[in-house]
Length: 392
Image (cartoon, rainbow, N blue to C red):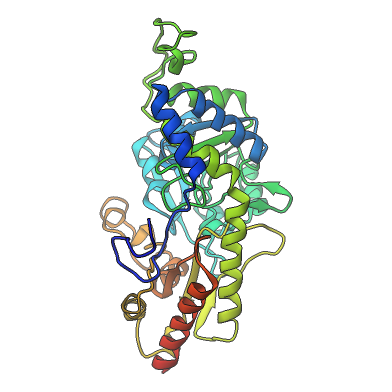
C-alpha cells in the first residue's frame, strides 16, 4: 500500500499500518499449514505477550470488546449491577456492561489529560457499583494510585481498558500488570495490530481459567486442540460461553508486531515530540498534559482548540485540514451525548461538563511510525496556517 491509495485520498492519511515482510511471511506460513483458527501460533502469541508485559496469564481474543466482555463476566457482573466507565471513550467500554445486563455509570474526565477523573469515580459509587473501568486515553496511563485507592475503599475490582496503551508504563509498572484485569486492542489503527484482535491479562489463576473457558463456547480443557493429533474429539460444555477466540492468522501478524513494539513506539514518540515543539508557542492550540513519570504509548495525538481565539469552529477547522490533504479524526463524542444514553439512561448533554467542553474543541492529528519529518512538518505547518488565518 502506498500513502496515496487510501479511501480518503488524503495527502497525509490519518493512519496507515506498518506491516513488514515478516508479518506477511508468517501469515503465508499459517495459510499453508492447514491450521487457520486458534492454534499453536495463538498460544505462542499469548506467551510472548505475557512475557512482554510481565503478566502471569494472557488470553488472545478477537477484539478488546471481547476482552472486556470476558473480564466483566469473570467478575460476575450481571443484572442489577453498576459499572463505572468514562464518558470519554469508545462505545465498547460501556456496551459490554449493557450486554451483561448491568448499567454503565458514566464518569467525567480530567481537563489536562482527558483521562477519567478519580474524583468523579468516587462521586458515582453506590451500593450497586461492582467494578471500575478506567481507560488509558490516547495511551497515557490514568492516575491508577488514586483509582485504586477508591476501589480499595469500596472493595471494587478494577478492569483497565488499555486499548490505546501498548507499550505504556505507570511509574515503574507496566500497563497489563497493575489491576485485576487489563484489556488490550489490536484493531487496525492501534499501536500494534492483528487486523482485528485483543488480549486480556491477569495474575489471577481463577479469573484466567474462567476467561479462557468462556472465550471458546465454555468448552472444558484445551478446546482448540480437539482437531489436532494430540487432541481428543471428546469435550464438555461447562458454561454458556462466547465465540471470542483469536485465529492463528491474526496471531501470525501479532507475533511480529509485538516484537516491533518498541520500534513503533519510538516512531510515534518522534511524531509527538515534533508536534509538541511545533505547537509550543501557538496559544490557540492546547496539547494534552503528559506526566513525565509515566510512559505514554502515543496512540493518539489530540489537540484542543481555544475557539474563543479563533473565528471558526472545530468543524470548519477540520474541513480546512481535510481540504489541505491532512486526515483527522475526533476521539470521542462522549457517550453521555449520544442518543442511546439520553433515551435509555437519562443523561443530558451538560451532565459531564469537562468531557463536553473537551469534545467541542478536540481533534486528533496523524501519528504513526511511517510519517516522515517532511510530512509532520506539513501537518504542523497546516495547523499553524489555519490558526494564523482565523485568529479572532
